[in-house]
Amino acid sequence: MKNSHSASYAAAGVDVTAGYEAVQRIKPMVESTYIPGVMGTLGGFGGMFAPDMAGMKKPVLVSGTDGVGTKLRLAMLLNKHDTIGIDCVAMCVNDIICGGASPLFFLDYIACGRNDPARIAEIVAGIAEGCRQSECALVGGETAEHPGVMPDEDYDLAGFSVGIVDEENIIDGKRLSTGDVLIGLGSTGVHSNGFSLVRKVLDVEHTDLTSPMEELGGRSLGETLLAPTRIYVKAVKALLKAGVDIHAISHITGGGFYENVPRMMTDGLTARIDLKTFPKLPIFDLIQRKGNIPERDMYNTFNMGLGMILAIPAVQAERALSTLTDAGENAYQVGSVVSGSDGVELVK
Image 1 (cartoon, rainbow, N blue to C red):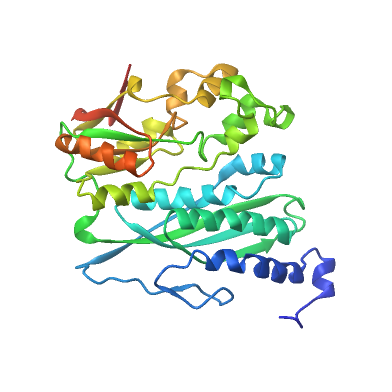
Image 2: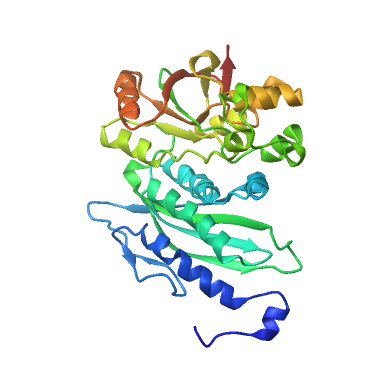
């Protein structure tokens, strides 16, 4: 590519040589995520992956795609771009693992007003870290300059991941029954949802984001809001390896409890969640107080401290909690599956 350059294209706002520089910066990061099955290396027209399907009777591919939303604005305000990629990976792989599928590979798409190779490398560093945390490979991606469409310093980030599961091991809620126990996995904060409301309520454009705040445990507002989304892939895989029979999983994202928990329920069953069984993180108290937000709206927008909820047989609750603790998770027994048509019931 050393002979590839276009003064005319650069004059229009697209610097192809900056793109080549970015690729060279990120290549070691990308290769650090490679797992068995990756074919080729960065630079081809398509990422190739040969999955190991030995022992599977009927392999099923499970895919997920998502972005980071307006949380990106916090990264821009703080000029900190090395964790936002973890969020992008998390939003995809946490969805995939809900079906019992192990993520195989990930691809990203970065749109920017101007290609700054150093900043692109920061973003991809986070993506690579997210892939390592979820034990999947970063096999490709795309960076596109949009001069005249986006301001020079702006960018957007989206991703796509594919996982695999044997059909007989798909987690789909079909075996849910009354009496199943609900296990909640602690979140790291707001994760990557509801930031349009967060930015409005906390007026982040005109607020001190860097000074420590006592009500946030000595952390700054910016650090708290930018904390990357927790990736739960290893935790769920640890449960499955320990023989825990997971009946259903819900990733608590946009729409909070009221939208996401019913998605794992089947007709005639409701998840009854006791709000006293897990800690509500201080950031949510701050958001609710500053915005005078009704409690129901909070639970209909944010994860409130639980990023994932699993339903398992009651007799396996102790084993599940022990396994999750050993895996480094903050896990709580938060309720049970009962008869009902609401899908979710929150009790105090």
